[in-house]
Length: 136
Length: 76
Image 1 (cartoon, rainbow over the protein chains, first blue to last red):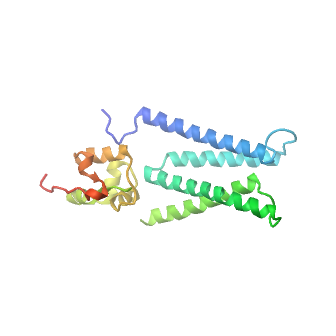
Image 2: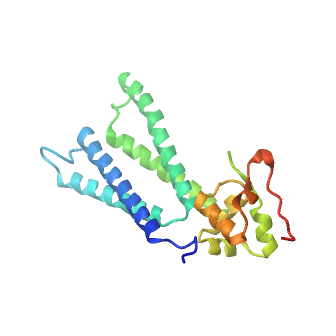
Image 3: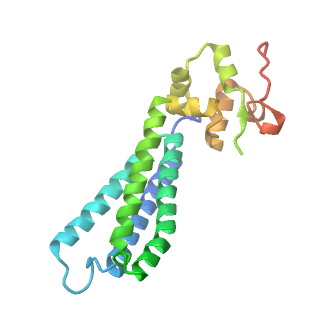
């Protein structure tokens, strides 16, 4: 009989399934961002550099999700906090960026810019949370 | 709403360090510290593992803040 702390085959399958769902989601978001953000990942002339960058980002995202799936539940909670703060930042910054661009103070919002902002915010929050976690 | 718990008392009763308890529960030492200090509520799965390890129902380990932290009967 398995003890509760052991990973049963069901738990392992569920974790693997969830990981692939997350990877699929990030791939879909990356693909749509490329399509609607004018990055040129699909359709027309596709610069190989852009494709390479896209593939690199997706590979990094996949590695992040695999790493996430292998941490304990408290660390996963901290990861989710970092992602939520990154997402919240995009939601709050986008309208401000849009208003500023209408006044022609800044360039119009771009999907790539918002992605960059979200990623930097997530990485920043992640680093702070993990630093505090390690010192606890 | 974060739960109160008596994990620290139960651990101290057995003379285990946070690292030793973490190893038994297959989580990080920091996770145990976060639970003990009330910064993080464990998942239901981990709560049951904690209950099984200490041979106690989880409601005697975790409780709502209004009820205060559950008391630990050392004699048990």
